[in-house]
Image 1: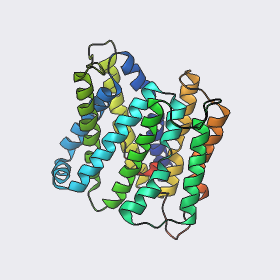
Image 2: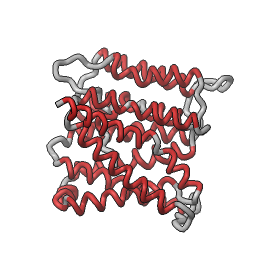
Image 3: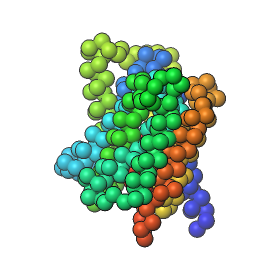
Image 4: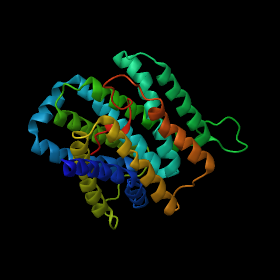
Length: 305
């Protein structure tokens, strides 16, 4: 029994570690002439093809459910925005702003699921926003607001991810394989469509697949993202949702540590304090209702590819 629990935790650690290191391939591929939007589409396409081949019934269910189309849209936006942000911005700053998602989930759950506002929910929002203000603070720059494209994409990606997780809750009656395939397909179609439009308009370049090492990087990270998804599916099915979410906060540590060691991010005191507030808010002010799960929008809901 204990070995099964340890394997479940190990699966979640694999998932969070892969995502914590995901900024590396997207920056590398960007340097090889493959924009993160194109890279996202290729990586997820390989995973989607593999799942559709293994579970053809899931593809039929995806095409029949309009709710799953909304899930695909949310997944596509999440991946397009987050992957682009970590490729061009400060990785620590992007990850921390992205992790404001529990705040947006509280608001979306009220709108879409009819969940009431509580004192704890309001406290989560207040503490999370205070943390965001510290992360966004720049001496001498006035009111702390997002000032770069990466900032805005990180925040918007968190909103999309929150919608993704609320939609997963709303679509709990759908098959797991269908939900996963819907998210994979969304992470292919939307980023590729956006990339094609931007490339046609000259805003970004068309992918250069002949670059040295690019194909190997795409193949390797397609396999790693697929492994990460399998780890999540195994771990999340065997552990309580709140334990899953806590374990997956490892992603923040891996992303912050690896980017700082590589010189791709700056660790400032306001970032550290703000990050603690953003990550602690969902747990310090967690709902105490009997049987309540992890706060809406926490990483437990993400089914990465």
